[in-house]
Image (cartoon, rainbow, N blue to C red; front, side):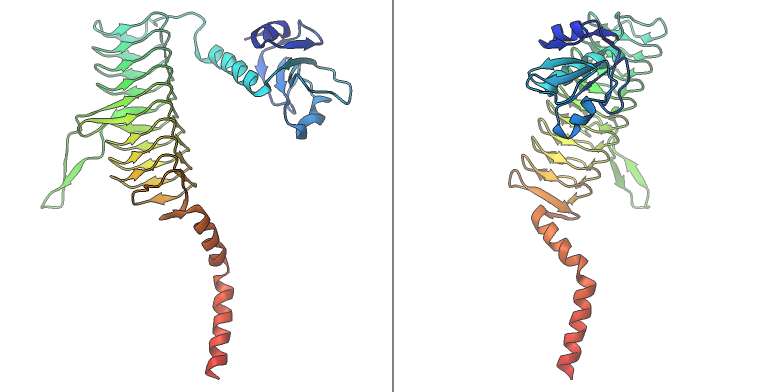
Length: 343
């Protein structure tokens, strides 16, 4: 994707200082940018790079006043971060969306599958009977969609995504490579002889709109009923969400979070990397868990932060940890006191 400063100014409603024909093909950090890149500057700590950057175009705030000469073309905008987000979206679309919607001849599409207008299907993708895909979607190569899978509009499924039968994904979603939606939940009953009897998992997974799911994340189908991921949820890579879990709107989880079966995660929660949630419990709205925290019982009070395993209120954990680090010295001092008392 190549664009000029004039085209970017028109897109962002900005003004140009320098060459309107300056052309860029990729975004780059201001300190690493070279000719043909565009960079941005909105943090005073990085101002010195504005005078040395080799970027062809530099995105700056409308109120930026240089104190040294600047060689690069400046593109002044009212809100640098908002403009940057819009530009990155354009470049991302250029890399993930085909220039023209096509159905690959190497894909396997059942005659009873329905594909919306403007949707692309890549090579070696498999769409089984009853699949319904909305408009302007991207189904990348090697995606598998099982029987009766439903997908809304403008959703992107990256290579290798697997969505099993009867599961539903909303509109404006992004599912990254090799994520698995709707595999069996871990349902096994112990037998008298010590073996395990598999319990069939016959539910489904329902994913709302504007959800992003990271690479290699697994969301299991419910044993009965539905595993539910509500609108606006953001999941990092390598997360496991077990059968029957419900995740509330706009909750975010970092990598390697594990949630056991039938847990209910409230809206607007934030779960740090490797946090673990026991089954059949509830986290209240706005709960925040520090990385590697483990929660084994329901949290009822909203908007609290927790740390540790088992997790306790964040402030209590920090104070306790300070004491924990001093335990060897405290033990030594205690032995001195005990010896003095005995004497």
